[in-house]
Amino acid sequence: MLSLAVAASQFLFATNTEAHALPQVPFLPRGEKKVLQCFMEKEEWDNRTSPVEFLLLALRNVPKLQMPLFLLSLIIYMGTMFVNILIVVLLVADQHLHTPMLVFLGNFSSVEMCCTSRILPRLLASFLSRDRALSAQGCMTQLFFFGSFAGTECYLLATTSSDRYLAICQPLLYASLMNRKLCLQLVAGSWLAGLLMSTIVTRLFFKSQCCGPNASDHFFCDFAPLLELACSDSTVLRLVTFIICFLDVVFPFVFTLASYICIIAAILRIPATTGRQKAFSTCSSHLIVVTLFYGTLIVV
Image 1: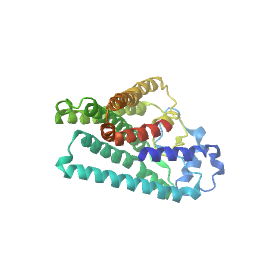
Image 2: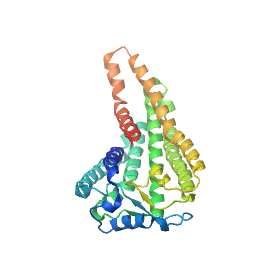
Image 3: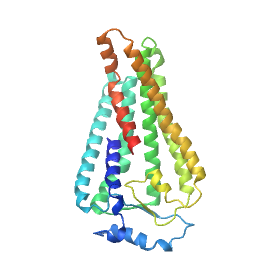
Image 4: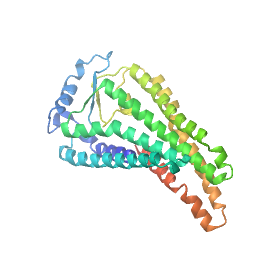
């Protein structure tokens, strides 16, 4: 649900990019005054220093939509949290649900709650207060946790696809191969991989120097919009990020895609229609999640 919210908000502010000339902003309540001041003092910036705060300017020039966007974001946030908390509580409470597939699902729900809570509360507050300023430390923290949780989600989807592959393509070996120890190792590895990749990128980005104005046409601290503000040499940062994106996003996606190609091929070889339907039902929900997650990620 967070991925869908990100894609929808990206589309909304992208359609208004043409009208972002700040001298024509129709209102300047509270935090919006910082926006105009930022641009008026552009020449006074020292390019050798990094800003103490960032201004997230997306959706600022549609004042009539602030309350509808707040309500929409609030509904998405509450719905996301309620559903995922319910899933985690049910999985923890019932011992019979501690199967590898559901353990992966519980961790995916936990990551989704963490990722959502790093973005939407700050966005909701900005809709009400119209204060777009975010401290440099807060921005780097948001960048770190978003990258970490997004990477963990990619790895969890890949591990879940491997679980489905073993269950359908190697049913006789499934119980011995996908045991509790391996399941916990895959979960821990997914979390650690996301944290490690995000730590590397955030540390390199924190060392870079940003030029004024420190304004980003985005609604949270994402890597690509912030990189546009950097005035120091970002060659190493771009190269490392490219490698990490391949390991963090492309590799899990290719692994997931290859797993489902093998799964679909195995299902089609099942002679009985009932057998094919039963086999496909065990992985259909995960396939929908994979499609929504990577579909919105590609759109963004």
